[in-house]
Image (cartoon, rainbow, N blue to C red; front, side, top):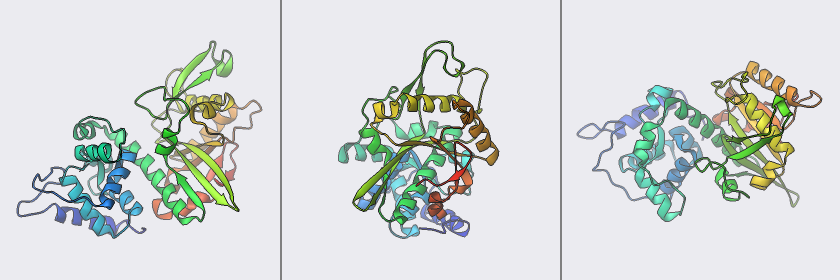
Length: 336
């Protein structure tokens, strides 16, 4: 569904306030304990989407769902008041008040997923967990969910192209994560003398997501998998101290993992690319420069692909398969 911007966003705010009104006006971030509902299959799908992403905006949910925007907003409202979904209040500080409503998983939603779908949902107080989420985490998570949602929608528009979900790839891992709380984690290995290090060194790699694209054509299947880095330009590209977080350290970890065949060892995946979505052309140029510095001949690894954040547009998802990407050598290219 497209065109859910501007005027439509204003309509959502008005409708949400109307839905949150009764004889006694409901507060947008406070549940009405009198609300109950009979769950539909679409409700269950919505709850599952929110669980997949940690936080998901109503715009993303409407784009992924079937039915009218107004109908989905009504169900979101009921799912919140019935306790299946949550509305983190810090979204106001993170993205502003006049914005699409952001939803997280509620306690009843978590119980539903654990009982009906046997998903490994944490047994925690999700309302408290959502309330404790910092603004920077909320913003970053929404950026990741927007990118993944845009890819899903783009695949729907492409014949014979399938989006491979992160949870499927996590389930099919060859080795367990090196950090229990990060399902995509693994340990990169740096040998003595590499990248200026004077000893053997290992450190954890934690990408923002992992997904795949599966193309079926002429009875042949072509698969490519992508680690995602959603870069909000809050991390320095490089530091003098390698042991502190930087984008340079991430790139070193990816290159070392590629050379040591760790993508296959940990995930059973062969064809891997690293997609980085970031703030500006200048930051992309700096990242490419760092990438070239890591290459033995200074050419840069085409393992990496970069794109500006504003080009990943949920309303123009088909652009993902155009030349909006820049490879590790600084040349414009396409994903396929």
